[in-house]
Length: 301
Image 1 (cartoon, rainbow, N blue to C red):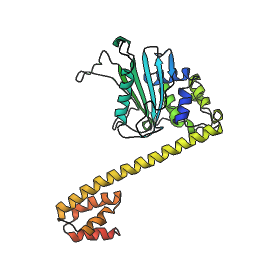
Image 2 (tube, rainbow, N blue to C red):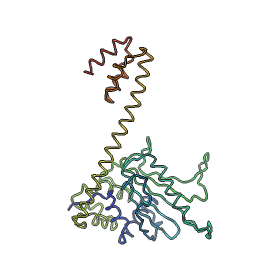
Image 3 (cartoon, one colour):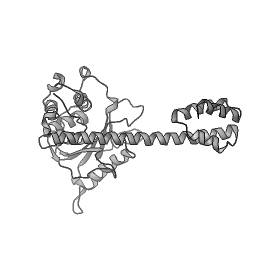
Image 4 (cartoon, helix red, strand yellow):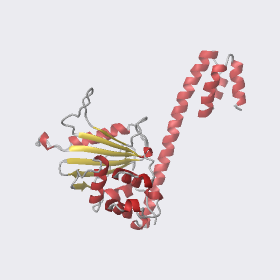
């Protein structure tokens, strides 16, 4: 048995956002948001319109499911595959927009529903924080007690921080996160997961047998597009880092050795990122221009 990648746009919507996904989504949200407590008893999945909650100029990076839970809360679920600029601002903007657009001019504030924004990131968001699930609400700054009217809640799952093997899964949240991360590498239905009806149902939906050849081709095209975008983002960040290193090193050289010839500067500009880092270390031992020239010659520049 072969499985598709549930993080893919079309697959995620089919598993969690289709008309047959109600029980799956209830169990998933209870596991991630409410630590497996049966807080969500019922929900209504709202089919999103094309372009909803999508970043300007970015396609298919946000995978969204919207639902009204227990009649008084709105859940926004999104998997973000690419670490695009200002992602955190977009998260808050979409939650605030969903909250504010609930009312017409004639309606009263009492009818506003709490908005819970669940974002599953395929990259690390919070450095030096080992937790792979984090929750944010409005709090008083010093004693840090919750605001009594917390109407917008943000929940983040950082997939790269989750490293548990199948045998080490402890909670239902662990099981669902494992499902998201590893389903595409499975060859059979693991007993550890299939013992739970909602996850077993999700696994069966994720089977390639449930997709037409045309749908599988579309899934492949989307994954290739994501890979191309990730390569472009990585190259842009590498170039940005190189530019910053280059500017710093040129200032250090001028400060230590004085003005350098344009030809020498052009040679330095041709260095790769690792070579620039090596040059940054070597500068500390330079006493005259010939030291810099000799170092560049040793790099075959």
